[in-house]
Image (tube, rainbow, N blue to C red):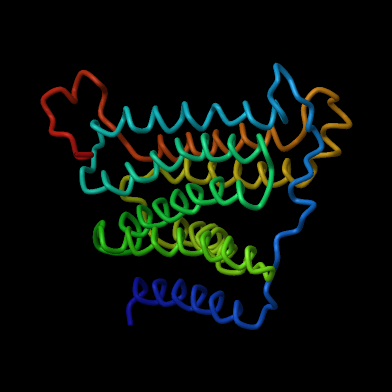
Amino acid sequence: MDLYEKRIGMLGVLGVAAVVTLFFVEPIAQDPNYHRFADARPLFGLANFWNVVSNLPFLAVGALGLYRCRRLVQPASGEAYRVMCWSVLLVGFGSAYYHADPTNATLLWDRLPMTVAFMALFSLLLGERVLPSQNRYRLWLLVAAGVASAFYWSWTESLGRGDLRPYLLVQFLPILLMPFMLLMFPERYLSNRLLLAAFALYFTAKLLEHFDGRIFSMLGFMGGHAIKHVAAAAAALCIIYAVPARRANVSKSQGNPCH
């Protein structure tokens, strides 16, 4: 077994270990306190104003990504890239919808596009770094797993026995595996620097979310959760630009890999 195969085996062991561990963890219901954000002030007739409008950067980043789509240097990555960009765009709508009326029912529409974005990124990185090429069946299998995890959580909540385990696996397993993929496998065209910056911003966003109330107490005009949206959108922007594209004036004679 060569070094490349050993590294793939290590990733496989980590993935299988995470899935097996899932079966030894008790079902995890959604904490009702999750919906209680520090800054719930209405403004201009819109409830939870800052937590809603702070999702606008997702719309801008998703739209920018789709604009860049026709100029990708690697056309084979177009499908996963396009799915990721649309998902980021839809996170802006889904998250705004949820924060306007934070409940388990509206939270589903926040989580659905997020799972698709995570899975599209994971597929994109697998195809660029670990496996020989992009594979649309792998992409859509991962996307289906992400969507199923969100619907499974929503269904179990409706039955009064909520279970977040599959959703947490779908969200955090790629986050666990992707840094290993960046470190163990050589860069082909996705920018390590920008992807590592995206991970740093993602963890910053999680800290802002965790310290929502404390940040609101310090700042007085905005909670940590609203700033978290901006940090997460910045992470998505780094990922968008980690996929190389030609300059606009070079792309006119090129085909569009996103169609």
